[in-house]
Figure (tube, rainbow, N blue to C red):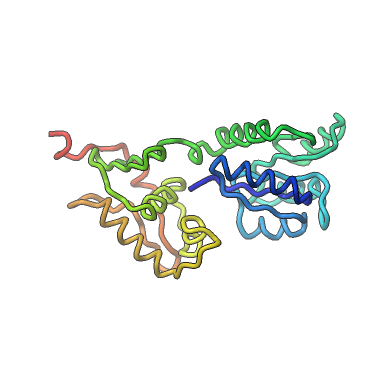
Amino acid sequence: MAPRIVVVEDEEALALILRYNLEAEGYSVETIARGDEAELRLKEEVPDVLILDWMLPGLSGVELCRRLRQRSETERLPIIMVTARGEEGERVRGLSVGADDYVVKPFSTPELLARVRAMLRRVKPEKIASHLTAGDIDLDRETHRVRRAGREVKLGPTEFKLLEFFMQAPGRVFSREQLLDGVWGRDIYVDERTVDVHVGRLRKAINRGRQRDPIRTVRGAGYSLDEQFAARAPVRDVAESS
C-alpha cells in the first residue's frame, strides 16, 4: 500500500498544501492540528513518516518528538521537523531530541517531498520499490502484474492491494480491522467478513495444484504472509520452464 504520512501542523493553509502535494505523490496522508491529539493518534497507529511542526497547541512538537523516542513502538519512527526557527542552536535542539531531519519555514515543497522520498528509501525501501518479491511470487507495482513461479496471476484490484499489503510485511499478523484500514481505507465502510471473502479469492488465484499457500490464517487474530515462505528462494513452475 501507499506509504502513510502523518502531518502535525496547526497552520491550516500549510497543512492543506502539504496534504495536497503529498497525496499527489501517491502517499496516504493524515493531518492533525494539535500536539496532544497527535500523541494519542500515534499510540493507535504508527505511520511511515511523521512531519512535525515545532510549535503546536496542546503539546509542542519538540516535546512530542522527545516522548515518541522514549516509546519502543516509535523510537525508530522517521521524523521530519518543520519550524520557523532557523538558528543553529534551535536546529541542534530539534535534532538532539530525536528528529531525523529539519526543514525551516518558509521552505520549498519540492524540497520537502524530496526529503520524504529520501527518508523512505533509507528506512523503508519496500514502501517505494517498484517490485516486491516473496518466495516465488513477484509483484510489479508499476504494471500491476503478479507472477508466481513464472506464470502470470490474474488478480482483481482489491486482491492486488491485499497481496501488496501482505508482501510489505512478511510474518506480521494483521487483524481484519487493520486490513480494512490498510487496503480499503478508513473512509470506506466495509464489513469485516468482506476481508475473508477477498482473502479466499486471493488464495484461489495464487495457489495452483500442490503449491504452498503463502497466506497464513491465525485463529482469533487475522492473516499474514508466511515469513518462511517469503524467505524461500523462488522456484520456477515446471510447466513454465519446460
